[in-house]
Every structure is written in structure tokens, then in C-alpha cells.
Length: 122
Image (cartoon, rainbow, N blue to C red):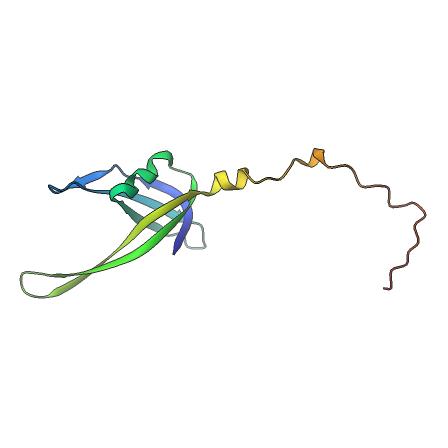
């Protein structure tokens, strides 16, 4: 799945536990009638993917939905969901790097008012 929008916030990398689990949060605001602010987690080596991005950039983030169960001390099951990112693309850079030459490089169209026959069937 993918989320497309503008970066609202990029959190600092957080480290947890003795094994050094790393997590970094990204908030993307979608561009729709009712914009949504989607918090996406990047974990472990994927945290570094956010280093070259900044607030305000238009991006496309590839995500996975994750769910887990937790049994509390009273024996009641609780369920949690998370959105994990695994790839991010800069959309503003992709739009500006298309291989379209500037309009001035095209030759002007010939004069179409010359004496060419109008032999179209309609």
C-alpha cells in the first residue's frame, strides 16, 4: 500500500532496549477533501531512509499494516495496529526530472494556410 502527501513532521530516531531497537516516526498529510495526518513508523535500518527528506516535501511512502495482540495482567486481550514504512519517494523531484525538453527546442509548425486540399471525409 502507499500513502501520498506532504511531510508534516519527521521525528528523531529513538532507541529502545538492550538490543538497540530503533524507530523513527514520520507524519504525512494527505491531499484530499478531508486531509488525514498519517503517522508512519520506520524501524531498524529503514530509519535512515528519512535522512534526506524535510518538512513540506511531497512524498509517496510504501507501507505495511501491522497488528499485534497483547494480553494484559487481567487476561484480557488488547489489539494494536501500526503503519510501517519501508520505502519513500520524493514526488516533487520526480516531477521536475522528467525528460521533457523545453518548448523553445521545438521547431514551429509550418503555415497550414497554404494551398493544401481539404480532402478529409468528414
